[in-house]
Length: 404
Image (cartoon, rainbow, N blue to C red; front, side):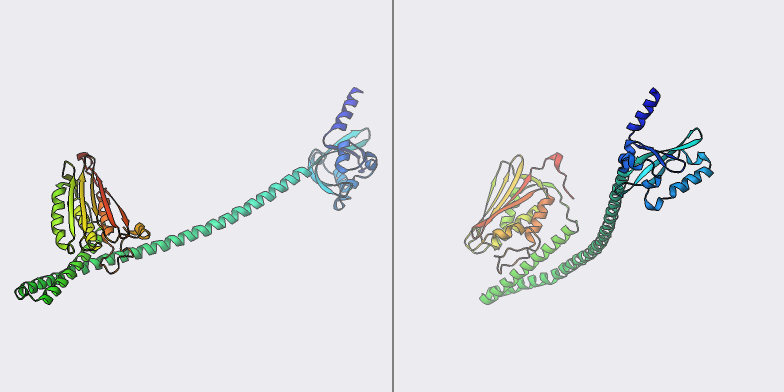
């Protein structure tokens, strides 16, 4: 009795449903979990055919199964779990796994079905399937988008490559044109300058004012054109990377005095360049030619953009750890809105009016100073003048290398 009580307790408390049917499919017993799964009370199903718990398409299938079972090898059918559908009392069809076993009792055969409800598992599987499907769809869409992006990037790359090729070709053509034009212009300009000098020389004894005036205009125009050509040639060398600084020690004060002597001849009436040097030393280690070009360019601008009867302050300072050069004028100044573009090639401030210039000078100055590992800054106010400050760290023996 104890064993029977134990078996009864196990069946009654089993999580899965347990149904016992005879060989004709009549339900003889069903445990509480089975009743809960199908939604029936025990008395509603006991004595009924098993087809009561099956959906319409499968009704009659169980009897066929039992008949097949009788004719088949027991080992092939018993003990093999099958996934089938059940019919609940409210008409809901649900999936469950059926395990079938055979019990022989005297001359009777009892079939015990073990029912495991798969509703939650199937719902989870469906959710995973839907999630997987959504994920696959997203992956396809993202992949498609990625392919489109890669294609667009490839096309953009090809377009940029084509543009760069054309730009390179255009740059080479421009450089070739500038080089040829500059050299071709130099010969006639030299001839014009020589002719003007001869005219000035022969006309001097006669003191004919109109001739002297026009000769001066010719010489001034030739000088402007020569400066423009020099700017273009300098820019060409910079663009092609051919301008490499050569560092060497020289006397900055001596160089500055030579520049003032040359530039004073270009000043306007009553314009004066005032030079002052500060520091116990006068030697620096820079590229003398590049530095001279920078100073001349800045003083030329100071002369051009300042009026008559004005002073241009030119100062140099050499200390133990730095060299500083400042050039200050009292000219028209630079509008604040233009200052951020001042060192760009071909840029000219809006208030320059008819004052001649190419807009290349300051760009060349900035690039030369950068090649010498220095810095250039400025401060300017409209109608109050401009000051440019060039600064270099003092070059010592161990740090004479430069950027090529």
